[in-house]
Length: 288
Image 1 (cartoon, rainbow, N blue to C red):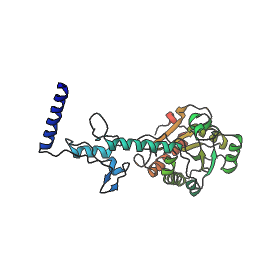
Image 2 (image 1 turned 90 degrees about the vertical axis):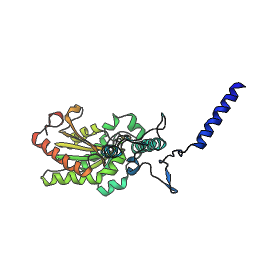
Image 3 (image 1 turned 60 degrees about the vertical axis):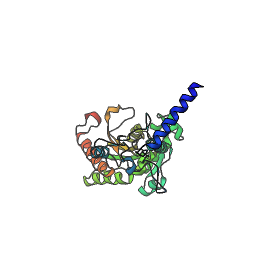
Image 4 (image 1 turned 120 degrees about the vertical axis):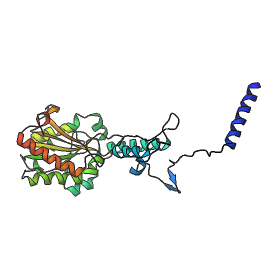
């Protein structure tokens, strides 16, 4: 009984202090609803909003946040993340999952004039669990590639969904023309570009052997993360052969709107390929 009375007394004192406090209780400014309008928590504007209540140097923090996709300036609510930060993490995770499990938009392939072939993977689940099958093609598929592509090109370029179809959708219309224009201006012969569904990076090896290309370049969607789900890479090799070591591959990575832009990447990759053809090497042996 005595304990109950003490608890009641403490509660009453606390309530009285709250009612008599001269300072209003701080309210959160990160509600996803403002002026009866929903806010896109995944927008760039929201990502760059400072969530620390009283930063020592707000200007310096905002400049830092402009330079990185890392989650800084997010503050905390006790020992936990703030609600908006948690919701943004969930949104980014959902976007990453969508990139992995969503098939490529075929309308973009048609617009780019890319015919499509498929690796030995039969579906998306097999593509994720059997990377070895994503590196191989059936004999019928290899015959189709031979029949539709220019034989023995100096440079063979193809596109693959890899682990992010969204990365290809976001970048391919800008990077492929920049890459091909750079090579054409140097008088370098380019093979017939096409698309590989359920592909992996080493699928370039049987393609290289089948078409007898001097240099093979695959533009492929990378494993998405929470910073971006639309990053792609270019893997390039001089006279790639099945089973060759990874050290013979050259990679240009982090191609997305917040990293290396697609047009800039296309121009740079064309310079890398020119150097490969000049030196007849790739990977660790290539010195740029």
